[in-house]
Image 1 (cartoon, rainbow, N blue to C red):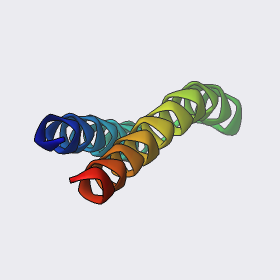
Image 2: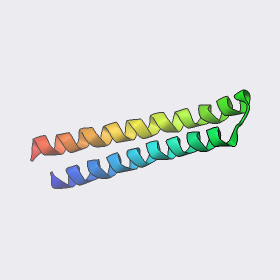
Image 3: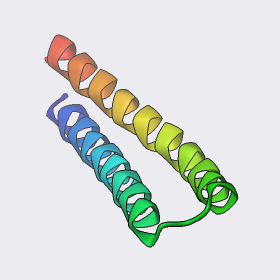
Length: 71
């Protein structure tokens, strides 16, 4: 079950990196000083990636907890 813990940790790390990437994109968009429509369009694309990264991170954490319970 140790492998399950490492797989979960890797998934969690990937999810957290994805969340950080979304924050980076949002900060860059804010610094560019885009108008409201362009900002909304860019952030709508980021929302889907944000939800996917959050889901991957949550699945990774669940996998770690499952691996800890089974070991």
